[in-house]
Amino acid sequence: MFKTKTIVLPLIITILVIGIFFGACYLSDVNNYKKAVASITIANIDLSQIPDGVYDGTFDVGYISANVEVGVANGAIKTINLIEHQNERGSAAEVITDTIIKEQKIDVDTVSGATNSSQVIKKAVENALRQE
Image (cartoon, rainbow, N blue to C red):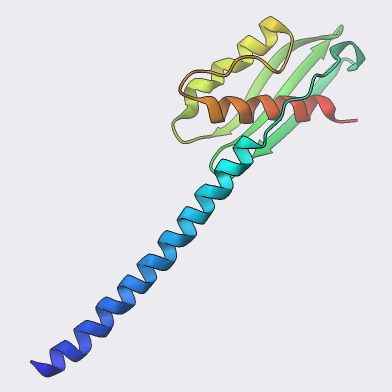
C-alpha cells in the first residue's frame, strides 16, 4: 500500500503541473490573439491610385488568418477571391468580400457573429492593395 502511494502521488502532481503549464500557455496565446485582433486598423486606400492588376494579400493573428487575391480595374475593386481563410467559427465573415466590392471601400461593417474574421479578411485586402 505504501509503495502504491509513493508512485501515484508524484504521478498526480506531475500531471497537475503539466496541466497547469499547458493551461497557462494556452491562456497566454489567447490573450496575444485578442490583443492582435484589437489592434487591427484599416487604412483608407485611394483606389484611383492602384494600377490595374491582381494583388495578393495575407493577414494572420494566430487563430484566424486570411489569404486573398484582389482584382482591380479602372480604379475599382472588381474581384476578391478568398484563397484561404482559417477561422474558428467565422466562416460567415466570408461574405464581407461582396460588401467590399459593392461599397468600393475596405472599411465596411463587420459581419455580425464573425467580427474577428471580418477584420482579418479586411486587413488582408488592405495588405494586398498596399503593395508597391
